[in-house]
Image 1: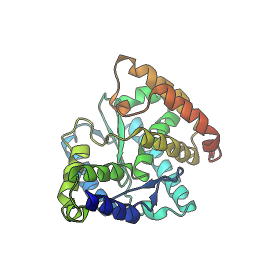
Image 2: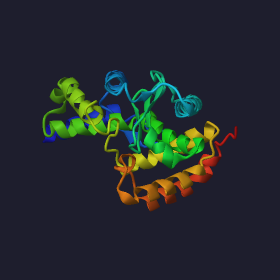
Image 3: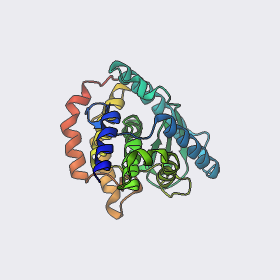
Image 4: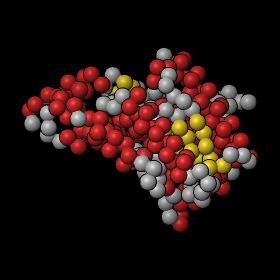
Length: 266
């Protein structure tokens, strides 16, 4: 156990230098960006292949999703560059797709691979609310929450083993954890059990991204109120790991003055 604790401290010192944008919280990331992006691309392509009959290639919803995605991706680049964090997204290869599915959901894989389900459009109702959704999901990828959660899984997986030995076997375990979280066979592809802290960070960062992209972040309050009403008959997949409605809306209201500083009306 002593060796394990020492190993944890060493690894923490090496890897905890990465920080979450906006909050500045330090992270332990034992999974490299190249590993995450490679696995993400493989899994994303598998999902598109298995759902090719549902992936829409045209129509107003596709046009809107791609437009919002492009605007937010540009804002992400601007924000990260201005804060000297551009290396964190240098290997992102943005892709935005729409799936004809009544599930109220959307997700973004590491590296900028986004899918929006048509089911969430009835709750979003407008382009600005869609920017709330996409900004939030993209923020998870930019903040490397997936890598962080998988790193926590690695530590749990190896338990009391000496970490140096564990890391030598990391590749196969990492793949296993990734497929558990993002596997094409999952009903909720792309949804990791993010912590409430990570969800709050994604809300804040997402508000900044959408504001910089020209979308009024105040729309987030109305959107989450509609999402709350929509969840009365059962929790949508999109909300399965999110904070309570009242908590989220209060936190968003508290953060809005900061987000509005970045707002650039179109």
